[in-house]
Length: 141
Image (cartoon, rainbow, N blue to C red; front, side, top):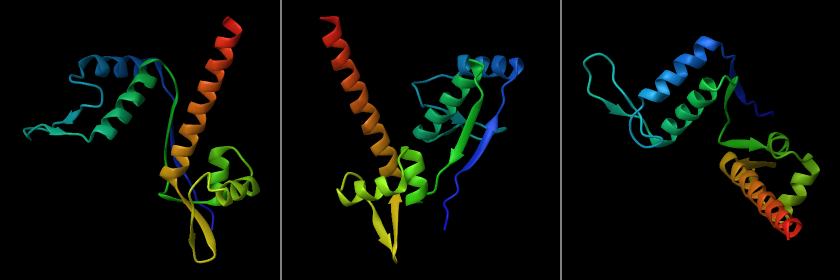
């Protein structure tokens, strides 16, 4: 069974960028604090994470960048997780055996929670940045 990741791409025109920039300027409140109002309904807050996502999309569109938004299932196959992490499936299986990343069995199949995969990717990026900064500080001395 393959895990599919659905994606939607938006190619940005100059008009789209200008509209997004205008919307960003009119947003009030702290980062991620958005609300929706339709007609005479009361203002309803948008969940913080959704607000952060919408603001990031608007910022990208306002700067003229094309945007791709995708959905990821909560549970990933090892092939999909390996592709997201940027390693081969056998390498991922060794990482699971060494408990570098969490996984669980569904019948005879190994599955990974998407949150664990993205946490692993973020932690690896953080480690790489710290190592790069340490190297850079050595070169600056």
